[in-house]
Image (cartoon, rainbow, N blue to C red; front, side):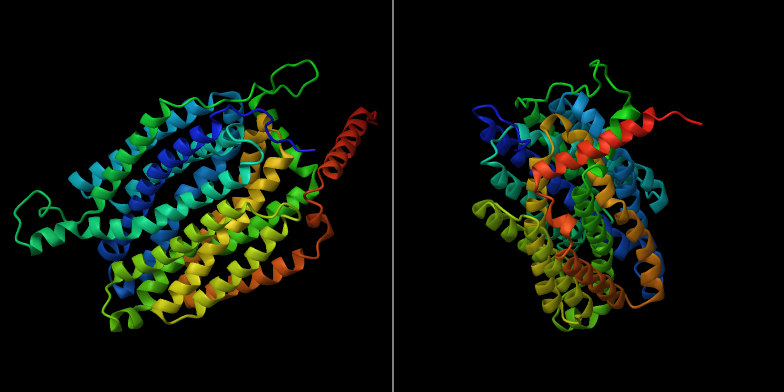
Length: 468
């Protein structure tokens, strides 16, 4: 038996496609600003070879400020998504995100703020994004039929990849626009800018505004409020968060799946930081010999990784993924992902590194789409906000930890060695999980429900025992 939504609206896939396209615009804007900010840190704030530790710390702290607040806000965001209008939640988050991007852009344009003064805005952006993600992630299962979900999941996996494909070149161009204007002898406001980084944030604000405008014209169903108590009373927010935890903990195969993703996120979480550092230092002799500068070299690597993601998303959208034993569609791509990261850490060639990131990006849509299909079949739509937010918290809690450790590891050891060591751990672990009987039962709906019922009964019996 499946918990998928039974009666999506007749035009649900059309609505989903419009929602997907409009939100892709905002994701592209965010990718532009994030990429431009990394270039800003590497070329403007910490440009010297001797500043490698400071650059590693700044990249780590920036990523940590965003991901840590997003992770901490996830449980509350999940409860909110199940209790409130999901369309209104996404609309409000898009508008707030537009205001935050505009604020950062104006600060960079009109003043010269310190790196640390921008971190609160970055952290708030992560928190708002967590609420948006919970509403978005749980909305499309109510819009499309179970037969169309694999295709929808494949399309969802292409959002980040499409933005990554376009954003590096566009961001590099935006950053270079003032210098190009000065080189061309143009005496305009553009030539007076120190760099084009503020332009990327201003475009990010516009992209969020476009996404919000489209949402005003869409109708997105929200499930009726779920009341898990026998009396029909609404639970407190804390008990609602606890419900999401218990739902997963009572189904141990789901917990194993999450712990596997937790390790993947620990291994790959700081990859964006390592990519910048490897490009700037380990790959510098090669890209200099080929006539590149830093920004185009970094853009090439990021673009190739995104090309892989787009190709993987297109294939999984057309194919629909495995219909049985979908856990293999998670674990096998994870092993290939680890192999790609191992090659990336070992490479001294710009083009070989690009090929490794292409393979890395190719695997991500496969493992994410199969995982999402498993979860959508196990969790009723009315519960997905709470359960998926806790799922996100468990799977991603290692990301901030690895990002925090990345700066120290990169300062103490060669970055390539760190990348290879993490990849080797992932490969060994995922090969072992192929033989984990609990994880291989993750798609046994009846078995998981029976296991959850037994654990719930055991808790009830323990609560009724008299205390001595």
